[in-house]
Image (cartoon, rainbow, N blue to C red):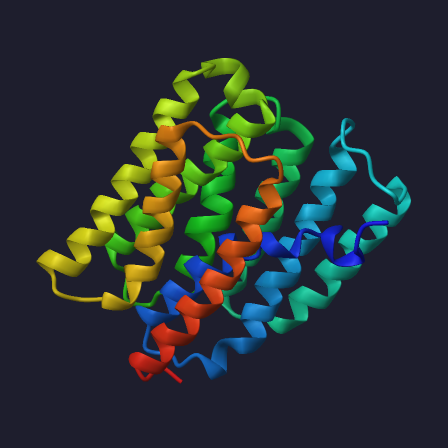
Length: 244
């Protein structure tokens, strides 16, 4: 029997936490004051993973549809009180709306589906925290997020793969390559954000992986390594930059 932790796919949390952490870095706020909302984003993401499974007719799970919907509602109800009731609440609410619309109507529409996911998981968490907007970080996050979602679709042969076929792989290579360029620009030209080197190395690893065209037997293994890499990156980034 699979671990209960595998049901909400906790190893995919970096997709929402990394943009959030970068947003905190570009803001005037410290990390500790934002921990409740970071937990809120985590609960929202886990709940939407379960909602994805609820709508996915092809996925075989050990729990029923009612249990999935119940857990989705529970995660969401735990998440929302962790956000302050001000105008910024629009971002987590929009995250919920985009995910519901994606699962209900857009999941089978190639390209549009991953554009919606890139906005939900990359743009919104960053914008929630970034009171000092940085177009380089934002571009790297959204383009890189688009590439990651495209890779996911390529492996699962979902809507965008069916639309683009092998061109989906080429587009993923371009997207990840552009994200690397934006981050290198931030480091080399602006001489800032050296803590992004671990993240760049992750993107470079993914780019090499794409050019080798290797299909791993277990995609979650990559997700788990990314999860621990993200923890290292987050801890180093806030200790070095004195954001605690």
